[in-house]
Image (cartoon, rainbow over all chains, first blue to last red):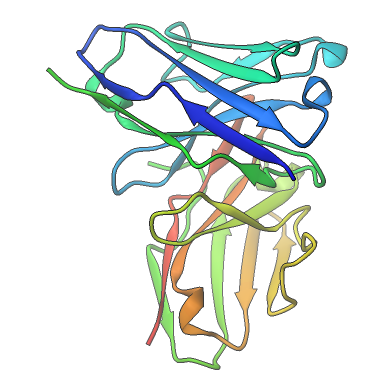
Length: 120
Length: 110
């Protein structure tokens, strides 16, 4: 069974940092392109960024609002995806989901999400 | 402001059919596959349609997708109260080099 479990969310002050983790199981993590998608309270889905598999270069892409502040990385030995968030702003407050494509080319598996609140 | 445009809400009676539109441009819908996601209250999104019109295993054929030019449509027939949710379209935008989503459409089954 495919499982994605996020952790690391919490309350942080503007300008602060936080690192989210996503523990994956039930599929070959090292072959998967992994993404982070966020959802601000009462708002729609917003793609944050992705990391390709190492065999596909392991490169990252980011949405404009987070580029230069957020870093996505992966540890294939631990089947874990990370999102390092620096210089956090109040507008980064959201539930952060990790997601991937296992069976289809789209985001067919999602974690339960972890809430990040940026507030003073 | 979302790159993909969806109506904020749609409604229909149980048993009826509803369609949800998703409008984009040549840099996204026009040249890439569209996916649709259902998000029930308080839960993570769930994939309904991928590659414009394909259903993952386990998704009933009451759900269908289509694409024409720079627009896509999600259709739901035989509406049930359990279909009340937010629906999102998504695709890759080649100009932005980013995945983009519509703003979401809230479906109410009256």
